[in-house]
Image (cartoon, rainbow, N blue to C red):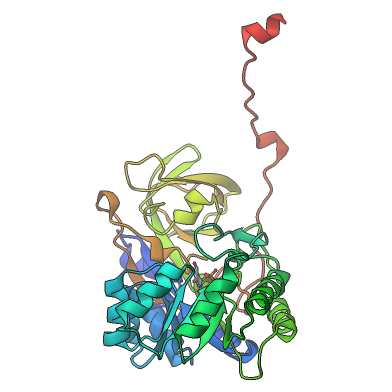
Length: 413
Ligand SMILES: Cc1ncc(COP(=O)(O)O)c(C=O)c1O
């Protein structure tokens, strides 16, 4: 991978035709070290957040050798780039073939599930193995998160005790509880509350857990979202763990995705056309900007122009991606100098988590080059850059309110 001092140097040298993922392995290294020094248990990286080989390698080189994987391709990826790493298959619904390959070919022993049927499937596909670590995924409150994951997975409180008991009986190794408070969780106390819920389920089942896995959810910085300090999350987990009915040897695990990688990557996209306040880019919602479309997150942006830097005032823009689908629209607002136009490059920040990971090949787009850069990310929870992203306010005068003409029928009344 080639290294450039800054995104501007890359533009000057290469004028890239394809979008480029600008990666900062040092930011991943710092986040990895932070979690290991502050979290009082095992840190498993949730590979789904960013499965790039350079991420897996940077984490492994910085002491993270446990990985939360959700599929066989993720298992194969970790096996290739972090040989000897321990993996936990934490997707609550898996195919029999994937379970067997994980157990027999890759030595995976930890599996999660939220139904009796999936537990039976795991036992069956591993030849009734007795050396499994069985993790019951619980449904917990997730109202502090900006990206709730509730609804799809997790056994509800009334059904949890029976499943916990079945798991306890099915293994001679570890039995644990796992949950996810929702991604980009803005409320640290959500962890303590979820742990209290887990504790109640364990007491009702009359079993002790060998592992308490608090999942992911640790936040990063985005425009309009400045999370509390990460130490507040650690404090909440410590309090929650102290209050739980567990034994002395119970292990604490977490599975951060976003917080380990979000600030480590941005994407350099080229402006192919400008129509008024709309910029047509060579990356979009079928590329690395899924959340800019579907969650309307206005990621931070910077103009990268080869030539005299712009001195024009900032103006709000919206983006369109390169595909022919009209969903491929990112409303923003993205603040850029008002003279931005075709041929300019835009760096879109904070795309290390669920950004580059989301790229598809729709319409023949989606190829992303990768280059390392040495400058700081646009924001940081670890002190590499400011902890917040300044967003200019839309002035009242520039906001055009469209009101519907009232129907004739109504007017007559
Ligand atoms: C089981 C599991 N663990 C961990 C994560 C990572 O979550 P986050 O990126 O919010 O830390 C996810 C995300 O979907 C998940 O499903």
